[in-house]
Length: 357
Ligand SMILES: Cc1ncc(C[n+]2csc(CCOP(=O)(O)OP(=O)(O)O)c2C)c(N)n1
Ligand SMILES: [Mg+2]
Image: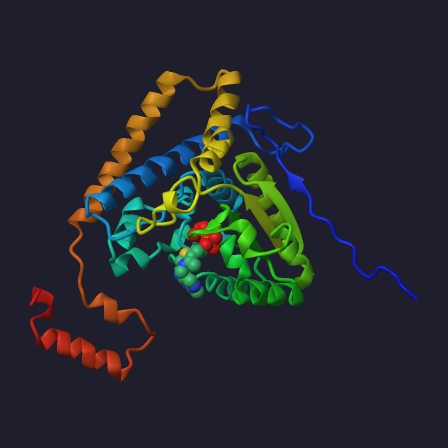
C-alpha cells in the first residue's frame, strides 16, 4: 500500500510590480493612498539614514554598520502592518523597522558607535535590541510569543532573520516550538540572497526558504520583498491568523550594498548580478505609482529630502554629544553582576583604564 501523506506548496505574491501597476485582486482593501505615501516617506527616510550611517562609519564616526539599502520594502511594509502592541524581534539589519516604529534614530547611532545605551529601546517602540549572533533571536521571539499567549493577550510577535539564519538550528527550534503551541509568531525571512559571501544557492538545497515552515506544521508564504504592498498584506494576514498559529514569510529581496562595513562584496559577486536587481528597486515602483496618481512630484521629493536631512542631522548631533559612562558595559550583561565582572569593574576603576592609560 502506498498513499500520499503530505502535500504542500508555497504561494508567491507580488501586488505592485516594477512599473507601479497594481494587482487589484490581491490589493488590501484597507490600504489607502495616504498610507502608501507614508510608506514611501518612511522607505526614503530609511535609505537616507542608511547612507548617512555608512558615511559616518567611513569617517571613523561609527564603529561598524550593516547597510539596509535594497531591503526597505520588507522592513517598512512589515513594520507598518503591525498593530501598536505587536512586538518585533529584529536581528542586526532592521534599522528601517525601528524607524517605522517611531524610534529616535540617535539611539541607532549610539548602537553603531559602540555604546551600550544604543541597546535601550524605548518601551513604546515595542522591539528588542539588535541581535548579532545569527538566529539566536528566534528562540527568544518564540518565548515572547508564548508569553503573550499565556497571558491571553492579542499580541503578535514579528521576528526577523536572514536567509543564512534559516540554516541555523535556532530557527528550526523556534518555529517547531511555535508550531506545537500554536503561538502568535511571525517569522520574516529577509532573504537578501547572501549570508556575507555565501550565496543563497550554497546555503541550502531547499527550493524556497518558506517551505522550511512545513516541517514544523507552520504556514509558509513567499512574497516579493521589494514590493511594500505585498509585504504589508502578507504580514497583515499573518497577524490576523496569529490567534490560531504562526506563519513564516519569506521576503525575496536583495542586499544592494555591503554585508557590513568590514566586507567588500566586489571580491565575491559580479556587477551584473547587482545591476540586474536595480530595476526591482523598492522605492522606484512606489514613486511610479504615486506619480501616476498625481500624488507626488519632484518638488515634493526635494522637500522630503530636505526634511530627512534635518531630521538625521539632528539625530547625529544628539548622538555625538552623548557622554557615555563606560561602566554600562559591565552593568547590563546579567540581571545581577557575577563576581568575575565585579572584579573587572573594580580593577578598571582603580587603574586609570578610563583615562586612556
Ligand atoms: C552564530 C553566528 N555565526 C556566525 C556569525 C557571523 N555572521 C554574522 S552575519 C552572518 C551572515 C548572516 O546572513 P543572513 O542570515 O543571510 O543575514 P544578512 O546578513 O544577509 O542580513 C554571519 C555568518 C554570527 N554573527 N553568528
Ligand atoms: Mg542574507
